[in-house]
Image (cartoon, rainbow, N blue to C red; front, side, top):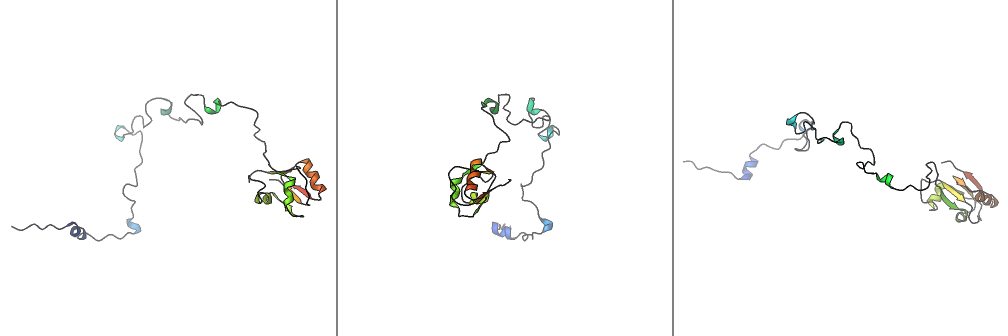
Length: 169
């Protein structure tokens, strides 16, 4: 009787075929990475027949249902529970304010623009237009460009020998 020879695991592996060469013709996605599309409402054998995964009855099970923003299931929504105070102007403009006395930092003859004011840290918010107010005295002759000026600021700029120009955003 012949003795049965068993080979070890390493011997069995090396006896197989060599590793295939990967090319465009034999590329495949990794196993388990691709899933078939779930087809709802296609009979009882499909797992999602009859109600198609929407449950039984109720508003959310009906065709064309879409919940509006802020809906809280019939409870009074938060935006209606909160008290309303005062008046909010939807067209109001909020300016970033710069006072004249702050502009004495710039040398004589300098052209002060909104970009320069933002770069020097006089204005924090980049999107806001800039308004120059007449608080304090202007001691240097400057050409100031801004989105708005107060009447007193215009007077003090011209008295100091400078000019002002309204810039459109």
